[in-house]
Image (cartoon, rainbow, N blue to C red; front, side):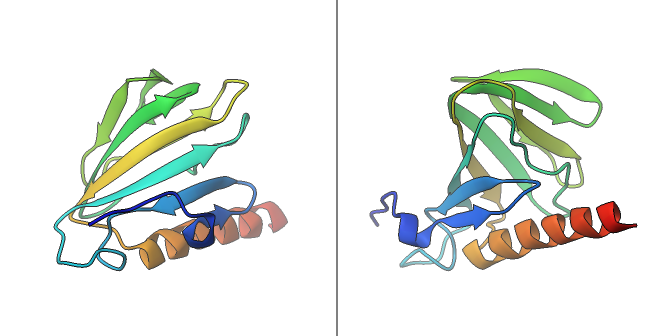
Length: 135
């Protein structure tokens, strides 16, 4: 299998959790069955993902470039090039871009996440945030 960065397949997430996710090897993008998934996430300076968890999957996040913070539970870590965090199933985690350049992170899930599942979870987080702001 071969995968490449293709903006047409990218998932652009709106504010307040603005980022771009590029699905690579996932059950709905791979040409054979896979038991893990890989996607790239890019955050502009000042952006972050919502604090969240995955009930049944471990997620490993490897920083390719940029600088930020990564939290797992109550622990906050510097997150920069060549560092990695892993969140066990059910463990709250979050990544924030605290630098002045794009933060790029390769994310691996086991069991795998689908591209459609990524899109749906990001949309739900933004809707939940908007509803909380309107309350």
